[in-house]
Image (tube, rainbow, N blue to C red; front, side, top):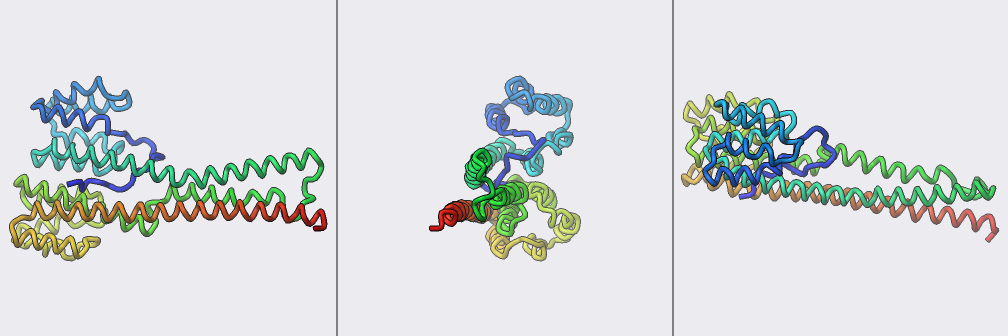
Length: 323
């Protein structure tokens, strides 16, 4: 049930802590029956130095009786938003090792996706830089030989298309989350986190209101955060979850059908988990397809700019020879 993926990570995020080295050993400690404070204390000296202050602080706070949710509050700004929420949901549900296992898979997939995205965007940039380097060398040689400016249509202006391409690639790297296809994919992934966490919470016997609150926190989707109080009031009044969620934005019809089916059959946790897998796969497919298509477009534009520049350069030389 791999429903945790939060979208494709980007390696240029600054100030964020990579918790991947902690997740796997912490899960193993907990599955071996070691308490959370002691597990964190043992990990503190075995993780990369950048993570040691956080792990030591969490060990100290949980050992003093604070919940993991409260202990993580001081580190929320240094972690992806969904990570503290998911860990809090696992702690509240009494299924922290299970959540850690899924989080480990999510982080691995996110890292792999980031690598694929970086590779897809790197080639157009390298291609443009190589073209600029070759053109710069040609212009330098022309300057040494006194032929600079004598080739019609060829000069410093020829570097402009490649500079624009590099600028476009950098803009994509910075603003990729706002692309239409990526936006729809991220909504699907938020829905996957929402449904998956909701399923775990219900399966652990949490009240509908508490389960919904944890799921909204794990989803990290702004459109849902302001609706928790009213939704909890409706649930206390006996309204079904399907009717409570009916007017929530960005909840696809398929998701609402899955909720209704789960409530009707009495298998809501299982139904939500299955639907979360579908939403996760849809979200990843939308994001990767959009970014791969854009990377391909940048590569095609770079190749076209190279071909056009070569044509102009040789055409200019041929005109000088009156051919």
